[in-house]
Length: 108
Image 1 (cartoon, rainbow, N blue to C red):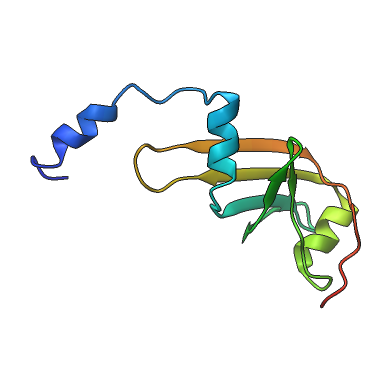
Image 2 (cartoon, rainbow, N blue to C red):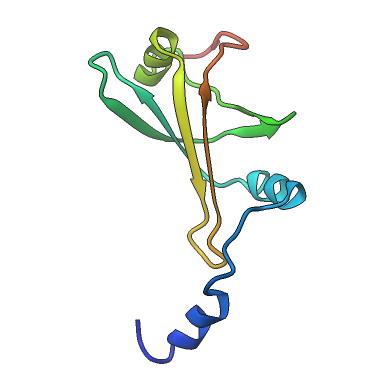
């Protein structure tokens, strides 16, 4: 960082906080890429970038039928999601939960 960039960094310092419901909905509707974490067949963390749909207070993610992570989630539904912005103001949303199959994939 240069001295010229420092004032911009100082402008947002200390202002990172919890999003209200409207801010959360707007951020999650913006089309950022999520990183989905699940456990592979050996029990190791397996993380993939993925698109998602935020609706009705939940995340909808559509894997391809042959994707490794779809099989991993079917065996162990514990998942984590991390979604963030790469530009100021820096925002992040993290979530943990149980994956549930809502509809079977119809493409490979």
